[in-house]
Image (tube, rainbow, N blue to C red; front, top):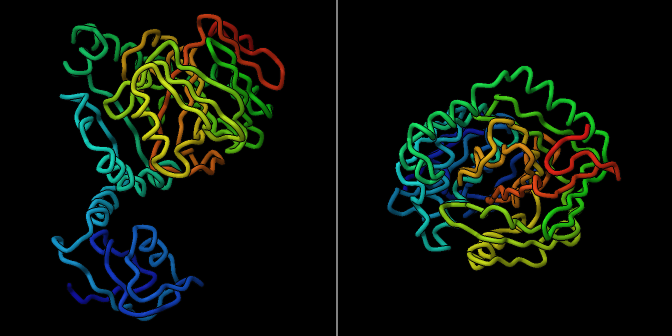
Length: 348
């Protein structure tokens, strides 16, 4: 252990995650006890506190760190503004992790994810076409390159205006009713303002999304058309039953054990964090890449887990799993009893 001092009101480096308080103290009205291990959130509280006398802390050497503290240090260290360019060489990397290590990895990334979902940092995510991604989408690399660039090279000002009309109608609504194959689900969005995604943080883009009221989901949804893909795993025919906003039944034709493991990750993993309306007219096929699939025109996606807090969402979780439901074959969306989409075509 190394003895160090940290000053309230100043930003502390991520390497102090896992450090131990040497005495009791009160910070911003919070009572912290001797022996407390400092988390990334604790460091944020210290940085925002009024300037005061330096605190004595004990900083473990890297070999002395708890495994989760070490992972949290790494996540916090890379939690600044950034542009992520996805160019996978192996789309299944990490899929063989045992459940406990996977949960640890998700927890480690949560501080950075929380800041991104609150827009505390600037971020953007784009896709670069690779052989591995092309094979996953059942295309040759030239075909996939054309597909990617075609999905990206839209008139985004015009798309923003078009999707803005969808947002206006949903913003006035209190409830959303989704009907489709083996699906009858109602969500509440009252008081939640939608977001038009038109090339600001994703590329390709093309969706309108909301953070549903956390205890509002009632009914059932079955992802009968496409597998729900997450962390290199396929869940085929996922069926979720919601009561008072929480998943109370979960089953699948394939991958049921993995589905239930993810839903049990933490308290928020079994609630909805997002309702998304796919609107990109040039994405019409399933590619096993959620950056594209959630934008398929005529689909919706529901994410279990964390919501985007800058939209008014309150659900916190280490999980954010977008599952895509195709409404083009016979689906309907109604808001406050008014039919606004049939067979994937907007009636607004």
